[in-house]
Image (cartoon, rainbow, N blue to C red; front, side, top):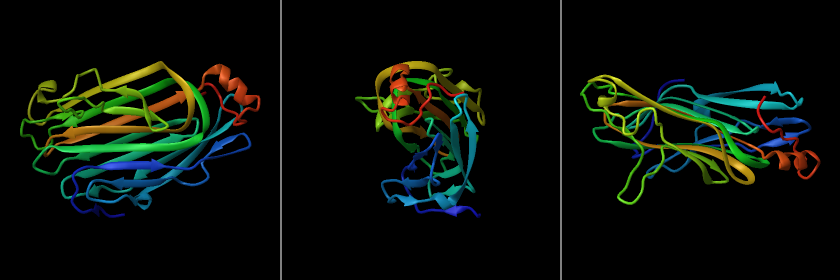
Length: 260
């Protein structure tokens, strides 16, 4: 597949959506998800054909089979003011979602990027976030000695770079903390360098609820002529007591408490 050229836009917004069915003891997707891009200037459109998806099936310790689906962008997407160099999304109705991408700002000014992955899931009682992470690698590609990578700010608020979402509401916010944002050449040594930072949540209790969708959103600013790779993962698990009720037939989805 050749390089894709798309009309001018001011930002990048991506939504990954997939309907799920549970058949017997398998947690699987009945079909490949739809993938959308949108911005202020471009209406949402289905871009699933711009990449390839594959499924991997595994069986956990409880004998439940899980489908993990991975979609990979086949070739770079070129816009007038930015380029999506690579993009990979992985998700599982277990449930977790991962969103990894590399972008380049090809314009002459700072650009705002937004990317999100959304996964509808069967009703899932939860009260904990586990194994969730954010990683950033920002490079002064044009070697002009100016690099700026940061989350979005305004006079009244600061938005997190990473938002792990349940039912459309933020359940986990993160900014990389090994190097505080913004990332600049001061964090890596000089013109042409690469600044890195990361953050990780191994386990964090959150208000209990029933999830019918999970998502992961990135929002960031990148300086002109530079590139950034952003990787993230978001996973929730059920509260044990409710999981027992579900297994007894309240919902009947055979959910497990933790990934094998």
